[in-house]
Length: 128
Image (tube, rainbow, N blue to C red):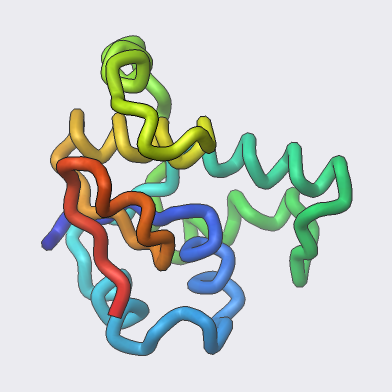
């Protein structure tokens, strides 16, 4: 479990040291070899900030230095990811979560999320 992909809420709770993120999950993020945040999650955050559906403790512009400080790599969405996305069963209609599923499948990543809907897909999800 050395390659992790953070769901948007997991990233926000991780960098803000929020108690909603289980301590054991936080420990696994901190000890992982590679931790990724999808560019799709940043896009989701920007959209939700614009429509007033996402409160952040700091400014959106502070996210990049937080990523660097935490050693988290931004994962781009590739053409291959969009092909995988296109053929995913519609167990879940949220496009941001679905692209995370596609990226997890294509890059052999474990998704860090409390969202049980990820379990409908052939990926590994961690939340404990």
